[in-house]
Amino acid sequence: MIGKLKGIVDSVGDDWVILDVQGVGYQVHCSTRTMGALPSIGEATSLAIETHVRETEIKLFGFTADLEREWFRLLQNVQGVGAKVALAILGTLSPGEIASAIALQDKASVSRAPGVGPKVAQRIVAELKDKAPALSGDATGTIGLQQELGAGAASNDVQDAVSALTNLGYSSQQASAAIATVLEAAGENAPSATLIRLGLRELSS
Image (tube, rainbow, N blue to C red; front, side, top):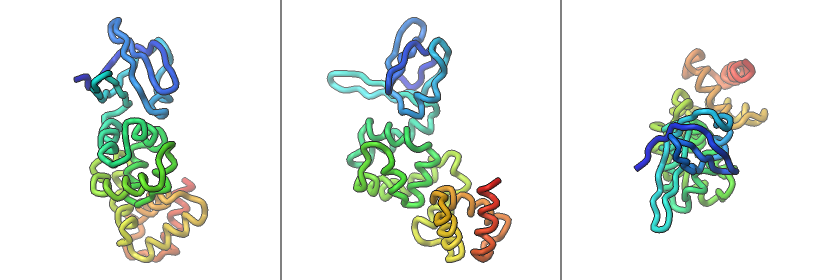
């Protein structure tokens, strides 16, 4: 089973790249995010690979990091999510953003991905909520508070502060991440007005 490929970018399509590995060209299917991160044709790159073996074909899927590949695998455990939909989600949201959206039970963010309807988005955030912390990536520092917000367990002051920031146009992920950051300095008992002020300072820095 192929788990990693390192070679030269030979050619690219809308959702695939031909990677030349010592004279052998491997067609690897990628998300739009991964495609955008690839170097120019003729330059070297390395991709984490997920191999799908079917009766009539062997298909390779490539990712810039192992964490993306783990999310690709995990998302497909949800009913209604196949390889195409999982790639669409990874093309729309980073691993950290997926983890945050699930922690916050923010199905609207997940449903931004092409091919993801409200029912599938609801199943994703419901069924994977316990998996998000382990695969949160760059959202690790805020995932705990986001889970509390998603479960309705955060304090009223915290909920009010996040709500105020979202009403000002920030996404729920941006707002919750900012409040999680300032809570360390302000303290868990800080009033909502203080959290809003510090949160806005954090978001504007």
